[in-house]
Image (tube, rainbow, N blue to C red; front, side, top):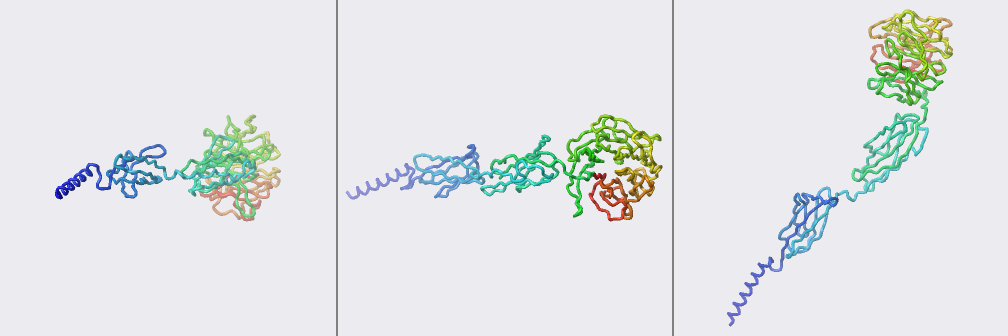
Length: 503
């Protein structure tokens, strides 16, 4: 009986082992499967190569190209499923694995910057909205902060009420932008756009400011930029001896030269190339409102860089040369008339009309620029007085005094002549019509091997301005001034400048 009981017990134990194998369990431990998918939260696009970690077992795997992953035959229990990928916030999901069902989880991952906040709306500080009478060089300032202390970059958009141009200043790292060469008399509108490189950009409100109408400069001159002549205005600080408020009045994309201001009309006349011809234009002293004066009869002569013209005293007319003829024209382009023609076939290169309108000084020369003469005529074309005739070297720089009793001019005293019109020792002289005598203004202060060119009286006629440069023809040119006898040290007013006018 005892043996039979032992056999029954063994059979029961054996049956128990068989049953355990059929239930996928070993003793008290059970196993199951876990599957899942990882996607972007924004658009549910699958994410590949995401690291999946189970806790507490620390089993790991990676998602495939479809964002899928799986764990087979893992212990049935509660798990924390972690998804981790560079550029995304870690994602956790809970899952309970059991032997009866395959557990499936979906993890939606957010980009790591998803919780990042945008910068504050830029607050415009200076100039204040609606500010007026500003200079043409100002600083725009504003304020914007970022809650996450991200580095900010700014874009400034600048518009005006003259044309449709929109200027964009990009990739600004500081809350400040320096603006130079703004147009006088123009109203500007500006806006700041802030970006942290993560969120959408944030735009400020739009502020406006207006630049004053007249810069108040009394000097006008020419600089060479991009192969073109460009007209500038400027002022000179006597106390510190430096040029100030140098303002570009014409574009470097056009050839503009020989500025002449009329204080009566408050306009600047100048020469500009148009369809391979030189014509007279006018503009306001701030460079705006450019108008063409001449049309059918352009300005012509042996060398356009040596050609000069003149305003009438009332600022309503201009006189100018065309080869051997002298013309007068209204500033609006009407009323063209020839007022003088040379009788010997010589070319008129320069002219200057006296302030009382009764006398015109002329410089004539041959086609090479030599055999020059300087003389005066009345408004009817009658010759009044001859200053120089048959000069061997170069002549130029005509400018009558306010009374008309003195004439400023330049002459190459070396009497040198060449095919390229090179000058070796050009000096400034004043001719007195009453005494018929000449005064050498260049004096002892003029350096050897240099030329003094394009001379003009100062407004009070106590000084003279002119261009000084080496006679090599390629060195820097500077606008300088001295007194009428040339016995004081010269003062350099503007560097790299030519064709001065001082009104």
